[in-house]
Structures are given as C-alpha cells and as structure tokens.
Length: 244
Ligand SMILES: Nc1ncnc2c1ncn2[C@@H]1O[C@H](COP(=O)(O)OP(=O)(O)OP(=O)(O)O)[C@@H](O)[C@H]1O
Image (tube, rainbow, N blue to C red):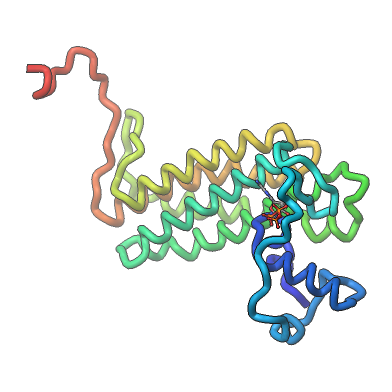
C-alpha cells in the first residue's frame, strides 16, 4: 500500500507523490491511490514535479474539485506549509545542540501538519468528498495528538524560569525560529477559522495547541542552550547611550 502520508502529501504539499498517482493512472491501475512499494520502486526515477495544470490560477483539492488558488482552502494549505517549513528551519538550528532531543517531536508535528493539510483539502461539506476520502483524511478522531502535545508542553514547562512580564521573541537562533513558527502557527489558525464547517474540530484544536507548544518549546530550547531570554521592560523615560 502507498502510505497514507504519501497520499496526503501529494494533495497538500506538491510533492512528487501526486506525479506517482498521475503516472499510476496512466499505467491502468484500478485504484490510482493504492500502489505496492514494489510498484512504486519500479517507477522511473525522474518523475516530473510539474503538471502545468495549475498555470491558470486554479488547483485541485483531494476530492478532485478544482478551485481558484485564492480560495480560503489554498490560503490555509499554503500557511500550513509555511508553518512546517519554518519548523524545518528551527530543526536545522537545533541539530547538534543540547536541545536536540526536541527534534523527534518537531518531526512528528511536521508529519501531523501534512495530515492537517489533508483534512483541509477534503472539505466535509463537499459533495465530492466520498466516505472513503473522508475517513482517510479524518484528523485525530480520539484527540490523541492534541493530548500528547499537551503532555509535551507540561513536561517542557517543568523548570522553565517564571517571569511576571512578557517574554520577547528571543533566546538565540533556534528559539527565535521557534517563535517565528509560533506566529506562523497563529496565522495558520486564523486561516482555518473561515473553514470551520468543512474541517474536523480536532484540526482547530491541534493548531491552537500547537502555538502554545511552540512558545514553550522556544523557551525550553533557550534554557537547554543556556541562553537568557529577553523580557519586556517599560521604556518610557529610560535613557540609552544613544540618547545622551
Ligand atoms: N499556491 C498554492 N498555495 C497553496 N496550496 C497550493 C497552491 N498551489 C497548489 N496548492 C496545493 O498543493 C498541491 C500541489 O501543488 P502543485 O504546485 O503541484 O499544484 P498546481 O499548481 O495545481 O500544479 P502544477 O504546479 O503541476 O501546475 C495542489 O494539489 C493543491 O492542493
């Protein structure tokens, strides 16, 4: 079986997996979505990344429906993609540091964001969303991922310095990148709000919890790396060396 995550990536992130699907259709498979690993291995190594079908400003949902790329669904998909990319950058800054134990969690989250994209790309109210597609793209039905992330948040929170004031996005390259990821996450959440009728409620919960996770993760990384976070101070009347 072609793994579900591969199928999902094909819809949401523009990977070569969709080309595999297109190719398998041409090869005459009854169900183009389901291929054995051996069949996939036998595909030519140079599968084209582009189909040119999106050149006129429309693209396809997982249901096959085509919509304008300015549609809210693609805004949400694109923002989820940005979020995952930013987490990838944070991982690159964490690698090889004292905070590297966090990478497994961040990679799991990147995979879950693919699943979020699949959920978004299969609108619940769409007449073209078959039962099979809906069950494949159902996100976190028992709330497992959200609950696990809450546990991760609680675990990381132990021992973090307590501040009475705002913590500024700071704490070194890795922590600051996680803060950027947090802000992209909040933007992703805002893009999901208009789609609430068409996505699973657990998708909203997960993305909302993820911004909390990224905030705590940024602080935890700074602490692991021995970098002091910057705290908000009220500046009115405070003289700096440039004011003299
Ligand atoms: N600009 C976009 N923003 C967000 N999501 C997009 C965008 N363009 C496409 N997508 C989504 O990502 C998937 C893969 O992207 P891809 O670039 O392959 O699509 P396309 O532009 O329609 O096709 P092609 O690039 O082959 O002409 C699409 O099926 C669609 O769900």
